Image 1 (cartoon, rainbow, N blue to C red):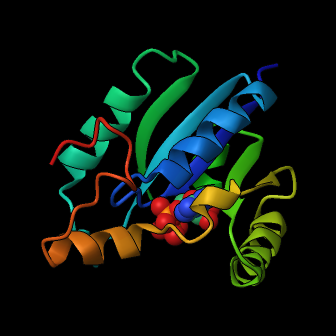
Image 2 (image 1 turned 180 degrees about the vertical axis):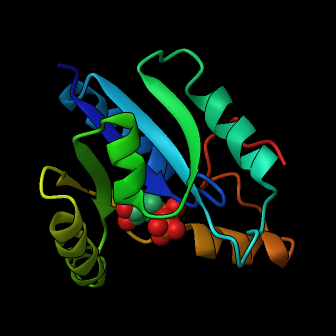
Length: 152
Ligand code: ADP
């Protein structure tokens, strides 16, 4: 039985913080599915095709990382692909409070699922996709905050 984890998010765009969580989580699982959750109401800042392309490029030499998209509940996606774990990163106590609510609700809906949290690397504690979007929107240089392969 493979240990399959899903790392769900918007990855709009993927940051060095996300990349670090993914690489650090790899030894814990056999397969890690980085899954872009699609929201019917908002399309995001960067086009979905770009977000997928960046993820594929960044992890192209890591066959145990798979890139997917999903709609609907994360737990329904996990059930469908038979993933036993949801991976999330924690930066702050605010992240913890937010994630605790989601994690408990996911467990209520799908008792077999376990949410696994990795503490963010300290150098990325202030980094978020929303800040990167703001910098980009205003013409700033985001290259220090995103993986090299995010060529804009
Ligand atoms: P969402 O749209 O669900 O907030 P994100 O794409 O922003 O998704 O983030 C996905 C996951 O990555 C979340 O668990 C989030 O806490 C984590 N994450 C975001 N930024 C960082 C970072 N700088 N370091 C570590 N984890 C992070």
